[in-house]
Length: 68
Ligand SMILES: [Zn+2]
View (tube, rainbow, N blue to C red):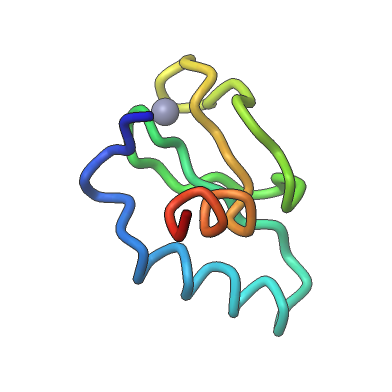
């Protein structure tokens, strides 16, 4: 799977940490690299509000994918 180069493991880790502290639900679009909010942690292939592609993944899900 291709992940947009702006979606770095550092950004994803920071988002996961933030979600644990603030109880928000961050995600990222792997197609265009936009941040997304209100994404379930295990979301996969949700439609991106910025680019319209099904590229939004929950931060925790993405971290698991990137670490694999
Ligand atoms: Zn997008």
